[in-house]
Image (cartoon, rainbow, N blue to C red; front, side):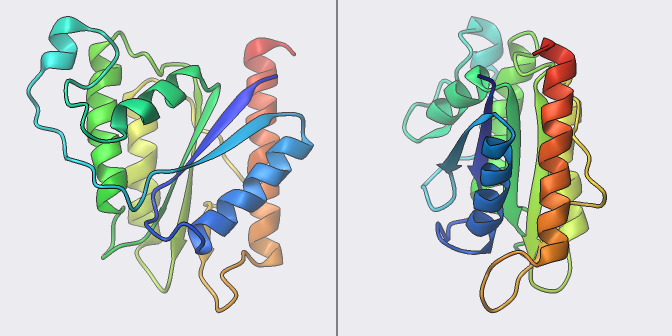
Length: 191
């Protein structure tokens, strides 16, 4: 069974971003994929130091092992598809997600594009505005790591509401995203 890793960059482990990932995870599971929602946000994570050690020793890890980035990289390495999700924080991704983008990106590129060929997708939550910048920031990780990006009928941006759940229109966008991820994996692996 093919596996999809859904990474929640929100420090709020039960908020809108988590709920959007839960809906998407259910759609993916119903379409025959194994899923894991992984909580990244809320952890203390150092930024990339650009030390270059990961490119010198090429052990597929960041030299700093005092946070959860290497655990996340290991999960990304065994996944067939990777979904990054972040709320909009002052017009961009959360600090935890930015640290993952920088450090995993550096490790991936320094180790023969170790995430290359895996399907990538971005999911964004926002209150009023700024979601497109977040969406672009997440997708840039995938393009710079030689990963095809799964599309949907529209951008995968969820506007938060009082019950913190995606609307029916947003659920349809997430369902279509799940369908496209399945089709891309089916094409790649012929399952």
